[in-house]
Image (cartoon, rainbow, N blue to C red):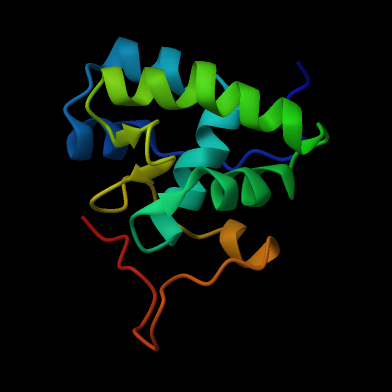
Length: 129
């Protein structure tokens, strides 16, 4: 499995404050570039987001094909984040819900993939604490 060509940085201490994931576990989770990219996409988009749209957005910044990205999301990234109560992953409905941004969305990852940040004309999701 190849890693994304450009995974945005994440403020780990902020992530820990917002998710209650212990620091060492947060570092282990965020070591995966695709996890960081996934969190940026989910933090920039209105929930819930379909796994198809998430896959498109992540694959837009990744050097792997969409099939490889989707497999990685379904079998590694999303289950690990759900196990740490960072997000809700409904594999039956094929949706992901991140209730609030957990990373600063300084890098408009979702825009690069053509995914609107919300379904209305609302302002972008606030990434402030």
